[in-house]
Length: 164
Image (cartoon, rainbow, N blue to C red; front, side, top):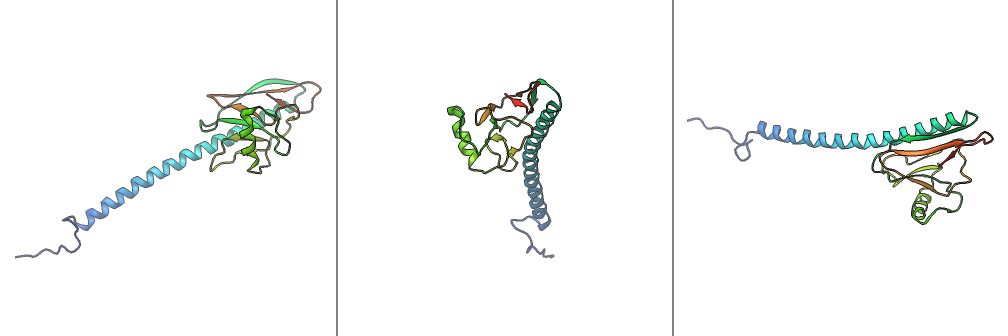
């Protein structure tokens, strides 16, 4: 009679089968972690593209004598507001914007355009050039819906762009 060696078996399963099950579980978990990472990376990319596209449109308007158009951008649904703010000056917005202004001040950012709420992994502010913020509320927040629309204007005698 032949006696089989079962020291490497647990609960009657050969070591090769147990190893295959563990590798399969590891691959499935790694796949879900990778998908989650790339989805969060997409949100960061969309935010960066929004900042870049807005700056390009403001630069285009700034290089003209006069301009009046609406910038249409896209941001992830996790972004509730886009705010223009000068954090070195005092608050002059409405009551809904007070909480946003106070939270933005805690991050000590150098930008003048912010997204709210602040994402955990991405840049949430950008210094936008050629924009006049003196006549605006501080902060001036625009609610993010399906499409974000920002009116960009520059009259003939102005040197900076106004956003509304």
